[in-house]
Length: 126
Image (cartoon, rainbow, N blue to C red; front, top):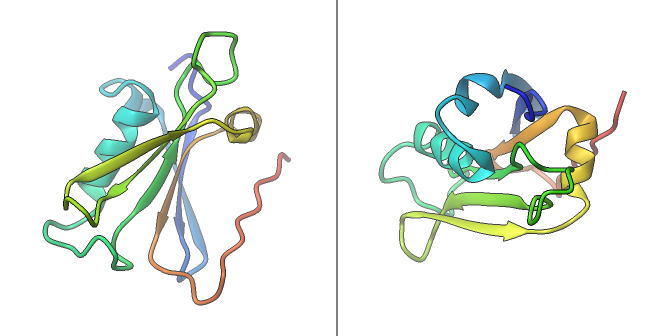
């Protein structure tokens, strides 16, 4: 799909493993970082999990207009299961992540499990 950077990175912090997935199949049904994030959360966690457990997912996603001059396009959606409500929770942030994500060819980052030590995720263009 035009406007999407092309891939979703599923990052397992325990195994230190990254799995790449194409954005296009998700983009045909869901618009923007919010829609794809919610779909990934819904499909990625089991019903009834504790939101504070390692099985919960933290997802960061950008939209197809990210990095363009469109109003409010420089936003990143952060999505996870809420410990307060047990439902999904989202927050929008504005940072340099959006512009960097397009140059990396990545639209969504999905973090799972827990890190053995403090994780550092470095993203570089090749």
